[in-house]
Amino acid sequence: MKGTAVIELENVAYSYGGGELLSDLSLSLSPGSFHFLTGPSGAGKTTLLKLCYGALVPTSGQVRLFGQDRRTMERDDIAMARRRIGVVHQDCKFLDHLSVSDNIALPLMVSGRDLLNEGANLKELTGWVGLRERAGALPPELSGGERQRAALARAVIMSPDVVLADEPTGNVDWEMSQRLLRLLIELNHMGKTIMIATHDLALIRAAKSQVQARVLRIASRRLHLAGADL
Amino acid sequence: MKIELSPVTEFLLADAQADRVVPPTGFTAWLTLFSAAAMGFLAVFALALSLATGRLADRWGNELARSSTIRISAPEGQMAAQTEAALRLLETTAGVASARALSSEEEAALLAPWFGPDLPIDTLPIPQLIEVVEEGAGFDAEGLRLRLAAEVPGAVLDDHTRWRRPLVRAAERLRLLGWLSLVLIGAAVAAMITLAANAALAANSQLIGVLRLVGARDTFIARAFVRRFTLRALGGAALGVVLGCLAVLILPGAEAEGGFLTGLGFQGWHWLWPLVIPPLAAMVAFFATRMAAHKTLKDMP
Ligand SMILES: Nc1ncnc2c1ncn2[C@@H]1O[C@H](COP(=O)(O)OP(=O)(O)OP(=O)(O)O)[C@@H](O)[C@H]1O
Ligand SMILES: [Mg+2]
Image 1 (cartoon, rainbow over the protein chains, first blue to last red):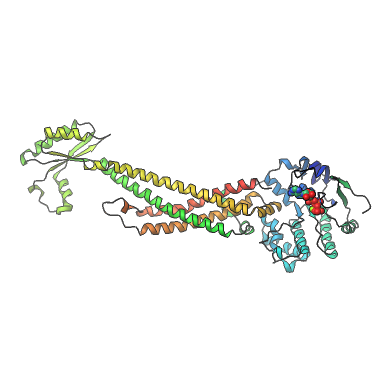
Image 2: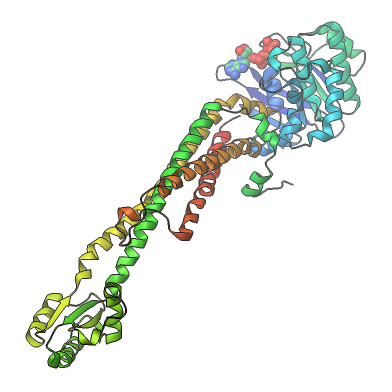
């Protein structure tokens, strides 16, 4: 492992109030690494990602974001960390009164970047995910696949150090999923850390021929390294 | 390294971006505007009341402090002697700072408004006036009257201004009430803005959650709300002040003698006072929203 991990979970347990959903779980995302996260529905993939971007605080154990203990982080520290972590949410989390283009640019807006300077970048990215024609539409007018593409574009617009993607290809066709995967792999080649939660084994196989990816699986509350059977 | 901007620069620099991400809340906006206007309107009256009663209290107070008068009517030959006797008596009266017989020119000046400047005052049996200036709690009018009756038969003590003393007290109370009303109006604006801001924040909790997820700091989110409520309070109060001033303007003008009710209004540069109300309302809204926003945001994920 080179350098310190960008995101680190150490003996983490989490429960929403009932029984423990995740127990004694350790994970270290080193810079430039590529991870897949699988597991049955309801196993806790989304929960684990939420722990990774600081939306949840572990019930026990320690989460470190860029070396900083989540428990000691101020609200502004968390905001700053999130600018370095691009997240594709399973439910996209758009603002329905803003256009697709504005939603993609939202991380730039809230961090006070000058949108005029970022215009070209924004356009290129919107084109990359195939939404140039739909840039002016409102999110509720998009199809499921279009929403996911927009969500991915938003996750990477800040050129973050880490991209956490929760089922980013759930609703797109094979061709588009390959296109999105290529974008993530390209970012990985630029040194970004990537973690993708997915059920799509074909996607994982396709990726493994292009990058060195570790496949983690959540089963019975713990994290396992998946075998070579994938 | 974090750069902390002062709240005011933060507000002035507030970009259109923060404004754009928070959707306008039509109903709250109108309620805020309306309440601010109503409060601005009321504040104009409270201000007018304070200033008018202040003027009244000052004027009456001055007249009180000025003097009482003793009028001496005596046959030609005794006038000087009686005046002399009254002045001597006043010298030994407790509560009298000074006493002075008015010169005939001064008396002529007093009468001029009634009889014109060319009055041949020397040929008329004009009583001699003595101006008595009080000190401390003033003199005992009854006692002085008895002593004058004994020693200066032609003297009449006229302390007619004394009846105004309770009125001056009432005017001062009213002025105080006026200022108190202004403070209460300010507090009501703060309370109302806090409620409205809390409602707006609650209505936008989902949006705030999304903004936090994409890396917005609390100050960015708060700014969008603060800016909005501050501008609404400013606009509303300005509207209310304009209407309030128009209303004051069309009140009947002050009579020469300055009856209390007819004197309600602004005089001269005092018309500038209402200009202070909108910025004050904006300031109150600014801090109320800021506090509400930071308090609410602290408890959000
Ligand atoms: N806010 C919450 N409060 C209570 N329970 C929750 C909450 N969020 C998730 N859960 C429960 O925790 C479990 C794990 O949820 P999670 O969303 O992490 O699963 P997942 O692995 O992402 O599933 P999927 O593949 O369907 O997306 C589920 O049983 C879910 O019902
Ligand atoms: Mg999930």
